[in-house]
Every structure is written in structure tokens, then in C-alpha cells.
Image (cartoon, rainbow, N blue to C red; front, side, top):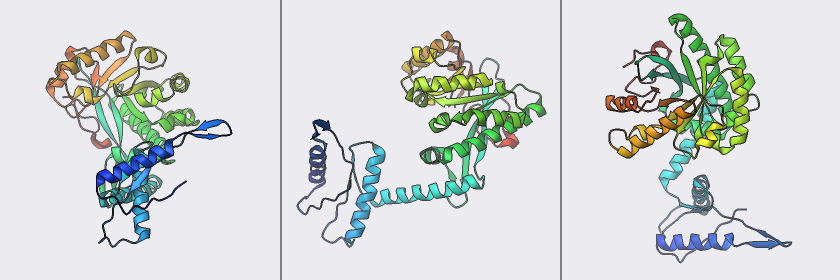
Length: 344
């Protein structure tokens, strides 16, 4: 299902793009087989070489393959040009995936905790667990980079088990030390939500840590919930029966409607930081956040604003009736030694 096209007559990037579009259009034309109409598509990787290029045929094919791989990751029916930076990104990606497997086996990943504050009182009511990775050679690797790698492989479920065990243990210890009724929020990915052993994993982690279920909140992104609303509702109902709280994360970035929210057994709605960032700069953003708060309260949900970085944002959120907030204004993610800083 792979083939190469070699062309000696194109002279400009526009000519190459036109050729790629022509090839794709030809391949995408419907094919009739045994009376049925079939459709295919193509991802195209492109290498441009001038007469002075010293690469061998094998090198050119390898680089075209790298570009084709990148085209596949960006969506169906795309084309990409090869460049050295693309090869370096792919090499880094492959290396990180190998290193991440070792990191999971050696338990090199660690959990940072960011405080969640009640806006009306300034009291810290919980923390969100955020995964961190300090790679020995490359240094700090952003979760934006390594979490997708884990989700594309079989690593995310192993990481999820480790994270649940660590966070429930840490929370149980801190609740005993401080005598406070705190809650820890842990993120669930799409693959974790699909894991048939998820309920057992959560129940076992709570039991071993001796943490009451109501002290754990599981966060699922809006995009994950909308991928299969009916299936998600069944899994969430089962989790709810364990006694844990459930939150919809990054609300506003997907396509959830009020009607869909009513069908899901949720307790918390978290407003995505992209809306919070614009508070104080955009009246439209303020209207959107106010509308989300009113909508969530109408169905009995607690509302948490993410990414609060300024006193002005916090003040606007209080005025709009938002219940809780988290962000650098209230505290940065910290290790277990200092994971409950005083509220700002």
C-alpha cells in the first residue's frame, strides 16, 4: 500500500503541490468492485532534491517516509514536505517513547499538586494531581509532549495505575496530618476510561490508601466524554457508585451541550483556561464564562476556573459566581513537601 513517484520536471514548490493534489485526486476517485463503490485516500510525503544533492536513493526514500508519517499524524489525505527539523522531531519522539517506557518501569514520573481554592473564602479545598517527568538527559519534559505518547501506546494505563496509587496515598496521609476535609483530582484519559479494569483499579487504590471515596475526584475531558457519550455515561455511573466525584475538564473546547451534560452523572465542571485568560480583556469572554457558570449551576454542578493568573481574573470570577479556581495566582504545582501552600 506504499509506492513512490519520481518526477524530474517540477521546478517550484507550487508545481510540487499541484502534483501532490493531482495524485491524491486520482487516488480518491471512487472504484467499483463487484457492484460496490469503494473509496480510498492517500497520505503523501514529499522530498525535493536539487542536482547537487548528495543523498542516495535510500536516503531520499527514508526522508519521504518521514514526511509521509508526519502527514498521517496531521489527518487523512494530507501531504507534508520533508525538512531536517522534521527528522529531528521524529527522532526526538522515538527517543522519548523509548525513554518513557523505561521511566514507567523505574517509576521516574512524579506527581505535583496544584491547590484548588474556594473563591468566596480563599480557603484551599483540594488539589489537582499533575504528572511530571524530569528526563535525566533532556531535563524537564512537558506533559503536553509525553502524555500523548503514553496515550498512543500501552503505557497510559500503567501510568494511570501508578498515579492513582500515589495520589490516594499522598492525600490520605495529608488529610490525617492536617485533619482537613480535602479532595484530590486526578485526570483520566480516553484509554483509561475504556479500560475494563478501571473500576477495580480505583477501588483498590482507595482501599490500600484508606482514603474515603468522596476525597477523590476523577476528571475527564469534554472531548473524551463526547467521543462516546452513551458508553461514557455507563462507565461514569459505575464510578459514581464507588462514591467518587466526577468532573468534566477543559469545558468549552469541545461540543458538549446542556442536554448531554444532563445525561452524565457529573459533579464538577471545569472552565478551560483559554476563556479565563481573556477575562479583563474581552467582554465576550466574560459573557461566555458567566453563561457557563449559570448553566452549570442550573444542573447542580460546582464550577472551577482553570488557569487563573491575576487578581483581576479572580475578582471577575467571584463576581460571576464561580465557585472555585486554580492557577498560578493561587499556587504553582508543587511536590508533596509543599503541596498545600496558603491560599492567596
